[in-house]
Amino acid sequence: MPGPDLEPVVEQYHRALEAFVRGDPEIQKTLFSTRDDVSLANPLGPPARGRSAVEQTMDGAASQLREGEPITFERISGYTGTDLAYIVEIERARAKVAGSDDVSAIPLRVTTIFRVEDGQWKVLHRHADPITSPRPIESIIQP
Image (cartoon, rainbow, N blue to C red; front, side, top):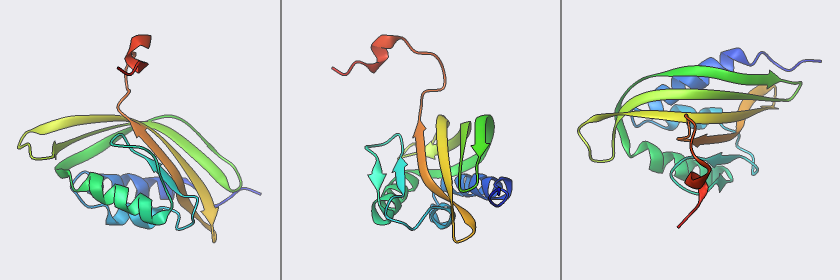
């Protein structure tokens, strides 16, 4: 038996991300799981696990963004099962970052995993990184 329709939740998630690049993480927080195994791997640091750590990570990232412009989402792939689903997308946003007064492009490669909790899809895991174009193998070597 299929789970609830994922697409309305993905639309809410996209709107929440648009608020996020304006510095507001609150809408996004409502879409994430409240369970202990929720995780977030954003491009600013190591993965966070657990609701409190995920919220702190969101707050820290959003505090460095302001005056963001709408994001475009390019769906690469996705799958919806009965209680788990995922999407892989390229997100392209523009925002003022940290103390800069310049609007900067922020492209991200993102994988989001959803899980049905109490009859609703919630984000179980989000992984985002800035790799959106080919890179040489040497780019993965750390000094």
